[in-house]
Length: 323
Image 1 (cartoon, rainbow, N blue to C red):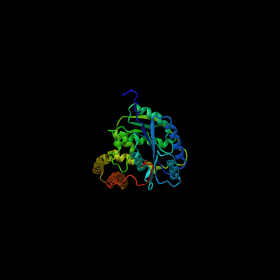
Image 2 (image 1 turned 90 degrees about the vertical axis):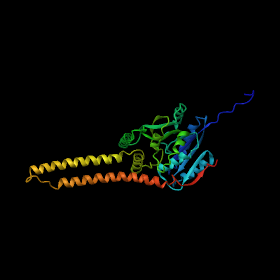
Image 3 (image 1 turned 180 degrees about the vertical axis):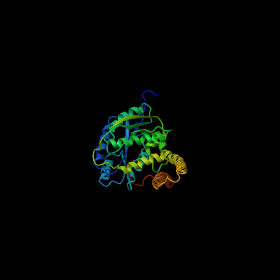
Image 4 (image 1 turned 135 degrees about the horizontal axis):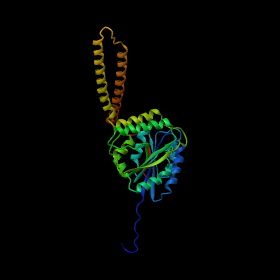
């Protein structure tokens, strides 16, 4: 080094704050304010926002435009229509350009103030720092059903370690985002992909807060959609259960038929078969058949979505990405 020559400073790493929204006009300003306050505590990092809007109709887009006009690092993706709670945030993740990606929901149920803890874990060498719920203000029944589902999904995917009580909230290294691009999933189950990709992971517990404003956009239909997407995308267990159940019912039917045949031979004149066993057996077998036809239909639907290979979303406009 020549005397007097200045050593160039190491370039700052950039954190991409990624979220999506639909009709969150009251939450977006609070979200931006709280995240910026947390980023100010970590001046060693640069930042950018990537916010995907799912065709909001309550004035959210105007709020996003106003923030983007004041902050050139606030990037916005305006979708042409509502592409749902799975495709839109996934597209925003793939659009992030930072060295790190901090993903959280815009309704502030996941506290942005945990960024410091996530960064501490990242600096220890972890590629994925996942926020997992240690508590929640959700109902006891819903939390029980979620826990039961995660246990079922884990049992059906023995080769992977799935993160329980994980919603996607977390910090991800660039190598994880690059690996995500290789999957070409038109309808992805992000939580399963985190386990599928692997890399060095750790967990940070947090208590899920209540929504700051508005009402939740999730209902039983969207939760069922996510549950079935995860099961179909990451497990063949339901299909194998169909085969196993067929064998068991076939074997049981054969045993019952032999027993009835023997009883009829022993008491030919007095033993009457009756219609009740026939009717019960017919309805039972019909129910089992419909159940597994539905399961096969779920897998066919997943194949149908994959074969069509439609884009994740159609974007109407991108703001600040050219900067």
